[in-house]
Image (cartoon, rainbow, N blue to C red; front, side, top):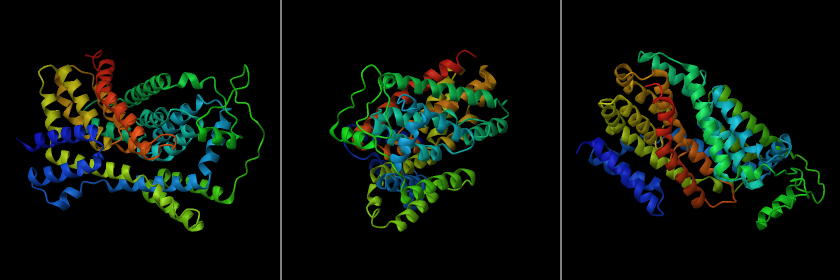
Length: 439
């Protein structure tokens, strides 16, 4: 049995074990990476560990550390109240505001994980405060990032268009961008309907009544709306001021976003630097903030990213892709490639996968009569909508910043279940909508 098959079978095994047993899948992935790497690929331990994404791990640590400090000093609550006030207290608009802001960030050039790292914790703070389904809110952020992610000036868009040019394919920047935006907007709309969005439409919130809301959330109750209005009736009025430490934290947020996005600096380094500075300014207040870093998620992502590198070293993605490209019916080969992109990207980097999978599609486009723009759009979307997976950067960020209203094992299972549905159903629907009609 070749190493590509060994790596694939080990991946299936660790996924099954991690799903059936309460064992962190990152730990299982480390074991699989060690065994497959040493005994099937003849790699030494240093070569195996070289596959871990230090960038991703630092991003998770830095961002969750920074937002732990922001939660401690009430800055997240301040942002939540301000944003609710900006939409007139209309709870149903909050998820769409998060979707739009994240999409805008990626469309103008932000890396998808960077945008999710900035908006995700704030969005999930809304979810915890105002009893919005955390799964819906977290996935809105990820789908927003992917929706704007293929604009002509975005990272994904630039990679996709340059790879198409290098492969001699006709580029269609607008087609790929709009296809991704429409698909992710539809997925967000479906989530909105299925996960309680319609119930939110009748709700209004007074953001200037945080104490009453906190009290209700603590005891699991609900505010009684004023008769006939659907608006939460306040019991009193309380002025909410902004403290010096909150101002400094807001400045830190703006600084992190500016430095990471405008100057293309690693958001992990920038976030942890900001967190350390804030901790130094108020050492007693934030001495326990480091304990709030999502360490189980760090283990999960570190192990899985290490195994993803083993898969690549074994040649598993290319093996499956070339097999699909050689399929006798081009349209079926196209569907298989969409699934290859979806499955592999759920565990690995979408950015790294796109330059690999698009050139593999050239024979199908050249000989199978398939539209290049539509097929590449289908491949790109199939390979990125699965970033909702808790094993990808974006999904892991949503898991790491879960609100306190939901336990981590419950939230993890919710994200995992949704990502499995997306991996199974997403590629075939995208293929049916974009590739099948043009063939």
